[in-house]
Length: 313
Image 1 (tube, rainbow, N blue to C red):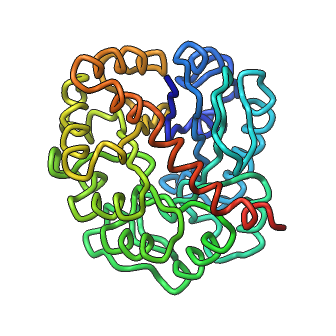
Image 2: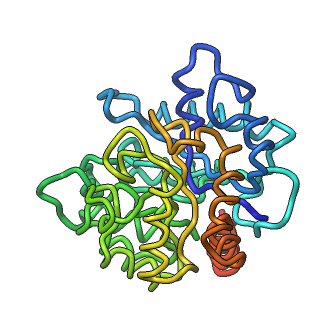
């Protein structure tokens, strides 16, 4: 079964570590990906805005350095930006930017991260910045003029816009202006009312864009507590699949970015147990879709339409 995980913060943990490693000390490691039989893992570059750093772009570049030196260099990892996802015994890595506070509308920086292999971009984290409103802002707004210019750049360069963390107003405008648009890690706001989760209207956008939303394993977004079970997570999958269809649901674990996880899903190895559990509740075809085929379909359609643009220098 093809397994895809649409979000993790391993490079941030490497950035914060005294001795960075891809072998031990984190949730996402060489061995955990192999044991979990993960075929695709998205690695996010996150500038820690909560630290009020003046060097956010430097933090992003240092994470890129760890990605190349520790992750891409590993035999378990395959890295080939904007090429189709295929069956492989290795783990295909996709590089993403989570929050653009360190770039704003500096086009040199945008061109650089694309050349370094970034394929997916979230405009902000929970806060508002010069581009968009974050989901935790009480007074949200649409994209700024700079934000519109950045989304246009991403569309023209064949890159994916990630709607995770956006305020509702910014979300809808970003989706309308983008070509490829998805949500890497969020759940259903109907099942649990949290600003990081998606409303019914936002879910309909996912279907309209023929993309997907990755279910995050963070209990706080699942039921509001510090503990959650497979059954709790399946309530979100049930609702979203029932609302917009089984073709638009995937995984977005947020491993190495969350302090707690679903019981039994503390590492990628647990994904195999989750799949076994889902097979007791869903048709085999739907389980395959949730596990990774939906992500592969979305990404490969993106590649088909954007290869020339993405690889243009």
